[in-house]
Image (cartoon, rainbow, N blue to C red; front, side, top):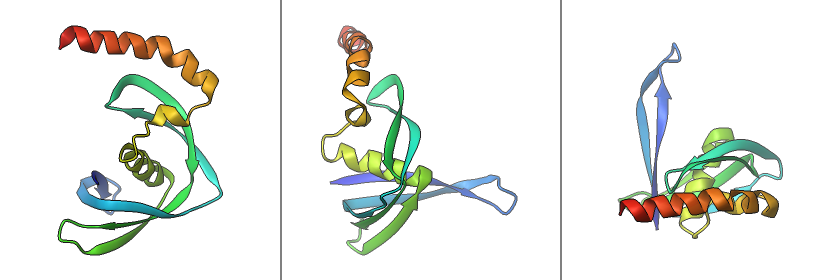
Length: 122
């Protein structure tokens, strides 16, 4: 089980200065805050769908790098959402699974249309 994320790096003036790549092998969320945050999420696996998702605001992740060294990462706000989103994929969970049932029902027709378009272009 592995996910890769690229963290934008900023210089002293706040300009983007490259990316730090994290390869998380066998990641495990070992701590979650009770405080939550809401952010709009989307996914390349479900194009054109964007919804607000509530997740723990702060998490602690334990993982190994490609050399097998163990690391821990404390993430909050946006990084917390990104890590949880990617970790969910490893468990077969999509961001839409975090939505209330009514919201998922409302998205069904759009998801069906996207599925049909994908089959037609394959």
